[in-house]
Image (cartoon, rainbow, N blue to C red; front, side, top):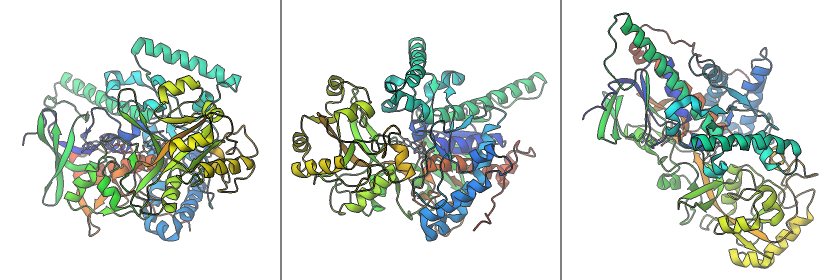
Amino acid sequence: MAPITGVGDVDLVVVGSGAAGLAAAVTATHGGLRVVVLEKHTHVGGTTAWSGGWMWLPGVGACAADPRDKGQSEASAARSYLRCVLGEGDFEKQRSKIDRYLNEAPNMVRFFSSMPSGPLAFEPEDSTPMPDFHPCDGAGAGRLLRVAAFDGFQLGPALERLRRPLPEFAPFGMGIQSGREQNRFLNIFRSPQAFCAVVPQVIRFSWNLLLYGRDVRLVNGNALVGAMVHAALEIERQACKTDAALMGAGVAAEPARMFRRIGIMTSHVVCKLEAEHGRITGVMVQTPEGLRTVRARVGVVLAAGGFPHDAERLRAYLDHAITGQGICSAAPVQNSGDGLNLGEGKGALVHPPLSAPAAWAPVSLYRRRDGSTAVYPHFLDRAKPGVIAVGRSGRRLFNEALSYHDVVSEWMRKTPASKRLDAWLVCDRRFLWRYGLGAVPPFFTLRCVASKYGQYVQRAATLAELARSIGVDERELAGTVAQYNLDDKHDHAFGRGGTPYERWGGDPLISPNPCIGPIMRPPFFAVRLHPGSLGTLAGMATDENARVLDTNGAAIPGLYACGNDMAAVMGGHYPANGVTLGAAMVFGHIAGQTAVDSPEGRTARGAAQPPHEFSTPQRDSSP
Ligand SMILES: Cc1cc2nc3c(=O)[nH]c(=O)nc-3n(C[C@H](O)[C@H](O)[C@H](O)COP(=O)(O)OP(=O)(O)OC[C@H]3O[C@@H](n4cnc5c(N)ncnc54)[C@H](O)[C@@H]3O)c2cc1C
């Protein structure tokens, strides 16, 4: 089969252009390898481009604050926290990977923020730091980092190849950064400072829209992907400059190629791994021109984003039957388990999860005007005062302010395995105006809600009428709301607002319990919840160097996995926001550096030393 025209042999093929794939590709290119990233979708970025962009990297912020400590005390507190959340048994099973994650996190940040070409600007949270999910020994707050807002202009024409953010999180296409910026929008009519900060932002956005037809200020996961693509473009640009200089000096340049050091090719679906004598040597790829091959001298990195849209595989891991219902994933449909299938085809072990197979989130389904369906993850509204989640019985099902993952875990645990998971979020008019509900943003008039979201939210003048329209027990719902309204300090049913994380999600202007407020002002509204996911946690077994392991525990030569293709570092537990992207960046970086340091990597880059000193795995000595 013919190779892709203009690509030639490369050192490393990376499958998938999310955080993990780009981290591996940029690291390997910096180390001297020639890399091609093959992306199935027409646009770059995967789930990462839709995400909040938060990375859980304990010790890194503390390291910057007190360089003498080097983040050690924070990392060791985080280790205690993980031991407590995972439990002694699961922690020990995952220990070598967790140690590698925590030890390598500062190196990863240092590497990407000090790259000579296109350094990434990491920044800490700029509003009240988010606490870890569980009030356990070692729990902390402020362990998240993200990439600062990025000027999309720097990407030139490549900006149009970047996957745009989800419209439901970017009203009218305007990027709103999570954290302080988002809070300002929520408080626009309550705080003059918020109002004054929002107005110039809206003017700047309108100006961009007028001139360029889109927002060019990239934020959240879009900023992370944009900055990584920019780094790749910079490396390539400098390589071309060097080649031009060599030609000027009379030295023969490489034959004409589509790219010198790193290429990112969209609409290229990797469909088979090639192997010779047990070693992975390349891929077969479906291109717009037909089936082609790419040979890889060093190996292949699988970073295809897990299997959130492979219903069969997911069901095999579930205790709950989710009868006829399935899991609605907010991840892109392209993430259908290709990486795992490719790996398994070459003998890789797909690790059964120690805990959950996926990162759960309660979601609602919203039909957009263009006919597509948005899977909306409920991150922000559930913990705010004045909303409850009820089942068909009309009774509350769980503590609504738990983390998105824990809400669905609780929901499954409490629903008999053969029953459907049915729930509705119920609120009143005051709540809808103040905080919004799911895809309905705040500050929408009743008329706007009816015209734009009439199919999405159910509305009724009384609770009894609402109960009838959504098929919920009328008397029970009235009783549930009456009981909830009595509890203004302590939620007697579920203790909502009882942990720092839950209170963080509430409304800081409401006291004594920022998560509790009455539901009493008609009309009343309900939105249907479904069990959903943000991505998967079960994946291929790897060692702590991101090398894929076979069923005997041996590394498959030339095969690496990272991001959601790799069995999650936390073994399917979900201790804090940002653990998936944090691990995707750290193990993507590790996969890239392992390929560079491999014997084949050393041969491929000749005698040249990588420009950065790579760390070696250390075992933590703390108890
Ligand atoms: C709305 C939302 C918000 C989130 N916010 C956060 C957050 O703030 N912090 C956090 O830690 N996590 C967050 N997550 C989860 C996080 O985004 C994902 O876990 C993470 O992005 C996965 O990264 P990845 O590189 O493994 O996969 P992806 O970013 O999904 O990239 C995988 C890529 O592989 C491509 N691909 C698939 N098959 C093939 C093939 N055969 N050939 C070539 N390419 C292929 C896909 O098209 C895709 O582009 C969020 C998720 C969602 C949905």
